[in-house]
Image (cartoon, rainbow, N blue to C red; front, side):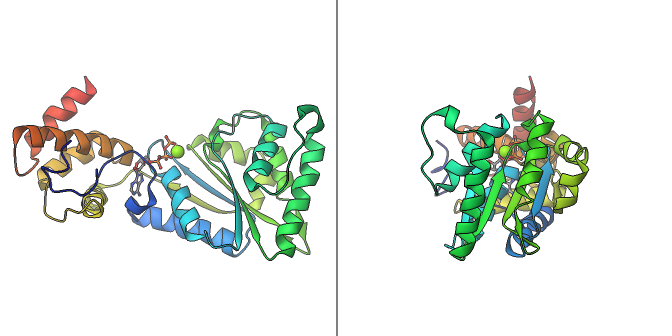
Length: 271
Ligand SMILES: Nc1ncnc2c1ncn2[C@@H]1O[C@H](COP(=O)(O)OP(=O)(O)OP(=O)(O)O)[C@@H](O)[C@H]1O
Ligand SMILES: [Mg+2]
């Protein structure tokens, strides 16, 4: 463990979606603001796309952090590799509002839709907003599921959406949604997360180190340049590289991670 050597209170580059570590790059900030706008102003649907490891799941945690007051009832579905009825069941369970019958046969999609409608109306009556978040939504293969998600957004009362549906996934999700024009029209707010450029990679690394308790420079500017190049600016890959660099640096008892260490680590990692 290198934390003591580098004077860190926590491990700085863990690949966990801990929102305390969230670095608000201009695009993460924009994506967060847009999704919160969709939720707070009841815009219906929101979409966040981005390549693997660029920060979609940590963004979900940041959204949840912002809306954790009682006013919001949220359902999170992380593995939408489900057929429509299963997806509905996962949503209803996640909203934890109603005990569902045990028997699968009693859980038809129509029944579940009715239950969900009731939950939405109850939430509204209690002054609560319902937010449904589907992460990894690009996994959804069956077009009918998208069609049914559109139906969810049809739950409206006097021109007011009864729920906010946020979909997050890899870039191909955008096309899948565009293929269903009616669903697309109900997705009012969109954001796309790109890899970090050099300046934001530097700020990202500094930010994560600062959250872990270290504000002194640990990576030379040259090292950061190489990390950005080798990771393609993708946060998960930046984390992996920085983590091993800190480990190597502590083994070698250096006081600064330089280009030589990054080069060695990157070569090893890609071999
Ligand atoms: N803006 C950010 N600030 C701090 N850490 C981040 C940020 N973006 C990503 N990370 C880090 O990178 C890791 C990968 O990010 P995340 O899991 O959110 O990516 P993802 O887009 O959901 O990837 P996948 O498509 O594989 O599910 C996270 O665990 C987190 O540690
Ligand atoms: Mg993810």
